[in-house]
Image (cartoon, rainbow, N blue to C red; front, side, top):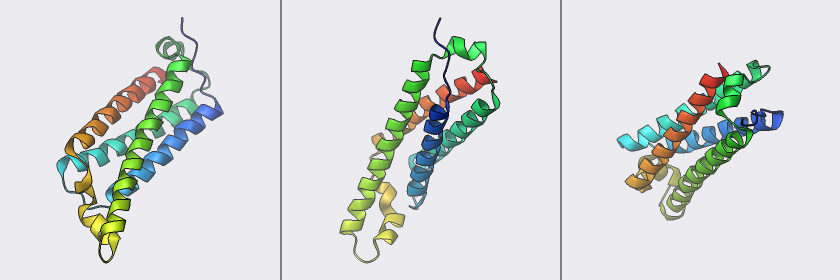
Amino acid sequence: MPASIAFTFGSVGDIISLIQLSGQIIYLLVSTSGSSESYQALVLDVTRLQNFLEQLVLAIRNENMVSCRARAIFSERYAEDAVVSCRTLLERIRRRTMYYRNIVARRASGTWMDTWRKAGWMLFRQGEIEAFREQICQHNQLIVRALAALN
């Protein structure tokens, strides 16, 4: 039988930091006028992830004791690995976005922010956006399963 999930203040704090990180990414992504369908879908996927994480924090705070069903589905190690994996993905997206934004800032003539707003989204490769989206969807599914187990 797997160990029960230890949703401690630290783990809730970790999830809250993921919410904040996803908010930073959303801000960076929407600061462009990205019009490609996949880019807009990435923004929506990160927003959805942020919403699911917020729901997870509320569910954990409202749950005095994690249910037996949740214990059967998730181990403490599994929950910890999921948080670390999600953080790694979000940090990778943020780094890529900041990398592209810095390129625009160095090379743009005039106001670099105008160039970023107009064309920053075009710097992402199509496969890169799709890979980010696929990984975010996997995290979203994990969180939905955790929410279902907690409710």
